[in-house]
Image 1: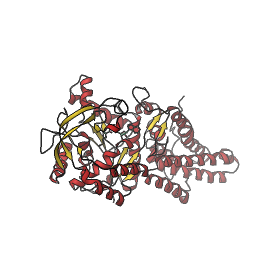
Image 2 (image 1 turned 180 degrees about the horizontal axis):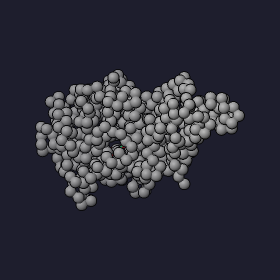
Image 3 (image 1 turned 90 degrees about the horizontal axis):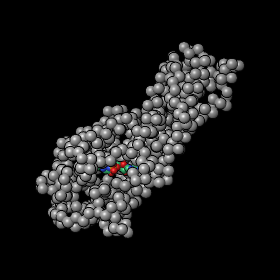
Image 4 (image 1 turned 120 degrees about the vertical axis):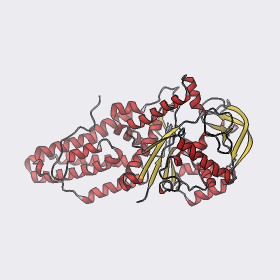
Amino acid sequence: MPKAYFTTPIFYVNDIPHIGHAYNILATDTLVRYWRKKLGRENVFFLTGTDENSQKTVDAAKKANEAVGPYLDKMAKNWQTTWEKCGIDFDDFIRTTEDRHHQKVHEVLQKIYNAGDIYLGEYVGKYCTGCETFLKEDELNEKGECPDHLKKPDELKEKNYFFRLSKYQDLLLDLYAKNPNFLQPEKRKNEVLSFIKSGLEDISISRESAEIGIKFPFDKSHTIYVWVEALINYISGCPEGETSDFWKNCTHIVGKDITKFHNVIWPAMLLSAKISLPKEVFAHGYFTIDGTKMSKSLGNVVDPLDLSDKFGNDALRTGLLSSFEFGNDGDFSVRNFEEFYRTKLAGGVGNLFNRVIILVHKFLDREKVTVTTNEVDIKKDLEKFNNLLEQKKLKASIDHFFTVVDSANQLLNDTEVWKLAKTDLEKATDIFGQLLNKLVVLAQMAEVILPESAPKMKTMLGDKNRLGKAIILFERIE
Ligand code: MSP
């Protein structure tokens, strides 16, 4: 059986999870569920975790008046339990403060060093702690500030180790020529390609003054640049390591803001260390909330747990993922979300299951109900759904699910089967059969996009001989 390995970015622990992060991990979890269904659970691996060796986590711990170690433990736990509460079914949660990660980082950095790609030099430049990156003059705003963090970067002058990124310019172009899907969607690939073509400079990969981090294996007085070691988490947490089929079939799901790291620096590091590359990177877009950027200062940051507590995890997942297509930028509004819940979930699929099951029980002898499964239709709808998921079209796959819901509701209303059953039971039985077929397809699709409702749907559908009782899938919320 082929293997598949999916990763999310590891999250900075100084922050608390918001729906921007939840969007990334829910999308990944949805793709994982599709592949687990196709390849079997043991052949699919899902890794997430936390990025902890960053100066900003030390600053945050100080601000909170807490010792760094316990602060990191507390924050990492918060990320992990948040994702568990949101119904994310990851296989492993990696923290970059773990030994297994430190060991792997040493191994990989030593390989890059042995390849002659690390040298000592002096760095003078402007460093933004918010981004954990050096910024060039032309990347700053008119006030000389980082445009994302609106803060003047620190002037740094220190002895640094450098990675010979410039050496990999042509090899990277070659990689993209040979593997056009290494970065998707196309738009993001073009950005990265023009960045590479504009000329790659060697990058500083050490800090002398960092208060936290992993030391170089060959020089313990220097700390490894957090991004360089963070990327290695994907190997530290890979089942069976970097020579395994999991690794070769690895998909990194990232936000579009971090493609330079995942699509320039990371493949160059791997080429240098002579480690095979992951299969692909998919970069999704960013969303605004009601048309404005989500930010703490604006006070419009949405906590995924607030939505999940009130509407449930299936609503959180499908509401977010169906707001705009995966790969594009978009907007999220709580008002549209509530409308989606009311019309598509409670009034749509929830109501459909309830009505059909209740009607079948009312008119047919439940012991004798057999679902006249019309295989062709089921296959056609499922195939379309699966194809969309193979292409990572998450919104389209959810939309297709609701097209089937709508067609079932239409069949129900057009035939007025509840009246028909009183005059022509034979004809009505045939319609009930068609409706139950649709419910069977929906229950199968739900395993991927509505994983908490899927078992309830299955219970309602019962087995070949006996239909289950109606269950309310989505409570009406005022
Ligand atoms: N620690 C790095 C990743 C290292 S991976 C080796 C990092 N962490 S992060 O916590 O800041 O961001 C994690 C992910 O959340 C990124 O993919 C980022 O793009 C995503 N998002 C953060 N805000 C977002 C939105 N408003 N919309 C969509 N995705 C967003 O970067």
